[in-house]
Image (cartoon, rainbow, N blue to C red; front, side):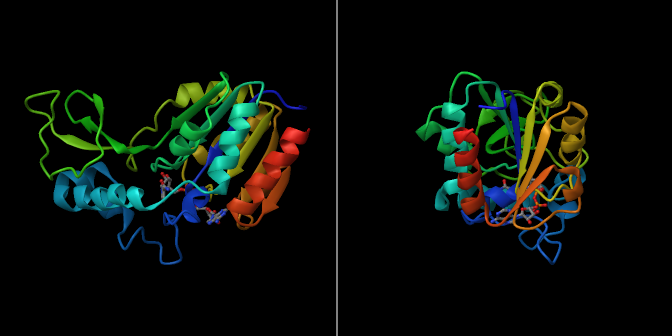
Length: 239
Ligand code: NAD
């Protein structure tokens, strides 16, 4: 294989063909809501019922969707990649996790959910994270602190994404960076391609269509993720 250290960033587009709606639909709404009303700390403080209900519905929806050919292709790649491979997803669904559970990765692989996970909750007082596959009540008591509540383990707008130092270090050491199904509209993930270029990596965008940042990529592969990602992975593994 020509490349050794791989970083792949995925966004809502990789899960779209599984039936998980993307975020920036033409109406600018996310499942009928403005993001300010459901995906900010202020929204949770103002209307915890609305916010918990929004994420409860999305959490329940996970039972109705399955990983698609693009998730499975990345799991195959993770099983066969001989160097380091960091898969960073902005998605809060568990579709990558399920694909990798079926096809266990090689030792150099790591998956980071930089914007959190729908199937986890955390305590508002201690920050402690726990698995949470069920609905959360508007005032769900935290098992970790008598005054704490449980909230979705989701990075809301205005909050710091998870594990940025680890991601920065992997990008600084990568020689191939691939961005799949992300509009490049949400920072800091939108800046990863520039960091990768600075590190001297080859950069590839896979998306339905060129994004506003497409000129930052050495190569663009345009079409549905379920077709483009498996084909790209096959070529990559063939060297
Ligand atoms: P986005 O909705 O802003 O952009 C989606 C991108 O995917 C677009 O560029 C679109 O052209 C592309 N796309 C759509 N269908 C595709 C397909 N079939 N194949 C290939 N590409 C396709 O999503 P984003 O860039 O991930 O940023 C939105 C934010 O919203 C993120 O922070 C994320 O956490 C959150 N979000 C997550 C999910 C999820 O967990 N599945 C869903 C919606 C939003």
